[in-house]
Length: 163
Image (tube, rainbow, N blue to C red; front, side, top):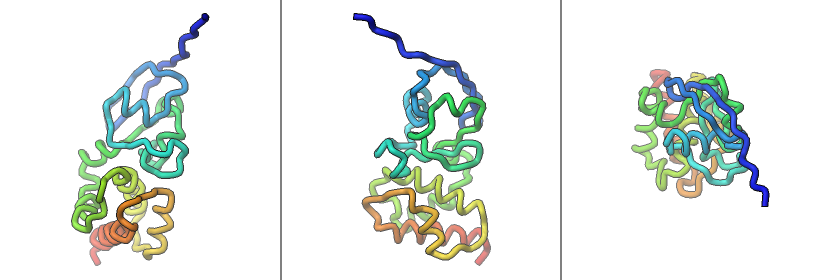
């Protein structure tokens, strides 16, 4: 029996502000790299088809599905996880609103919801509830019914706008 070893490649990227160089299997997904290689377990795996949003991370400023992107594709990129966004304080007000409104019941979808919501919040303005709902439509939650999540995002945006 001929057992072939899996091909690996060396990548360099910045994760939560820290430069990282690592050798990874060429077929390892970004979210698996973050979880297995860097022990950053805030981003979750659920559907593994890019449908649920639990694996959402930020790559070069944009929210992306970590299960659809290979780690090698992030070579040279700036990657931010929920841990990094939390540590920086960037999403502290959003997280507080999620907590106040019980928008994080089981918590499994919460990191992806926060990262996706942060993208909309950072854009500024005061979108209506339908716009918030549409922006979050790629993130699935089985616990909250979404109303409390939309409430949290709306209130964060109102507070940031001073209204």
